[in-house]
Image (cartoon, rainbow, N blue to C red; front, side, top):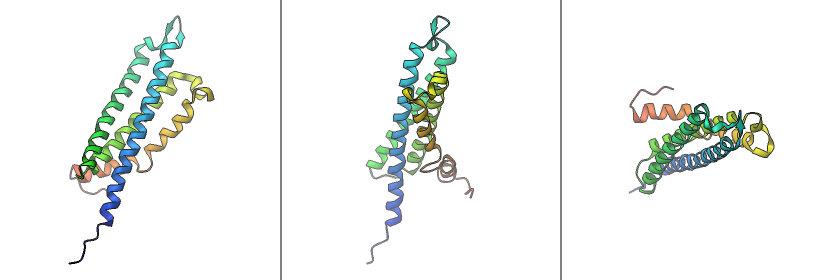
Amino acid sequence: MARKARGFKYILDGLNAERTLIAAECIGDGYWFIDKVTAYAKERVVFGRPIGQNQGVQFPIAESYIEIEAANLMRFEACRLFDAHKPCGAQANMAKYLAAKASWEAANACIQFHGGFGFANEYDVERKFRETRLYQVAPISTNLILSYVAEHVLGLPRSF
C-alpha cells in the first residue's frame, strides 16, 4: 500500500508553529512597551503631578495590558493544542492576530505618552515601534487571518 503524501500537512503544521512563535514575540514586545510606558508615566511630572495619575494616560495603558494578557492566553491555547498534535490552525491564527494587535496598541500608547522623547534614540521606543508594526503584515497579514477565521471557523464563503 502506498504511503499517503503528508508534506502539505507538515507545512501547515509548521505555519501554525510559526504563528504561535510570532505571537510570543509580539506578546513580549507588548510587555516591553507596557513596562516602558508605565515607568515613564510614573516619573514624568507635568503641572506638579505624574502624567500617570491622569485617566487619559492610565486607561490606554491598562487596555493594552488587558489585550496583551488575552493574546497570551490564546497563544497558550494554540501551543497546548499543537503540543497535543491536535488541530490548532484557528487558535494559532487568532493568537498571532491578537498578539500583533495588542503589541501595536501598546506601542501606540508608549510612543504617544513619551511624546517627543519617544523618538529619541536613548529611549528605544521608536525603534521597537517600527519592529512591532511589521507583524500587522508579516509573516501573514491580519486580513488573511480574518479571511481564515471567517471561512474555516465561521463557515462563511471564501472571500477570494
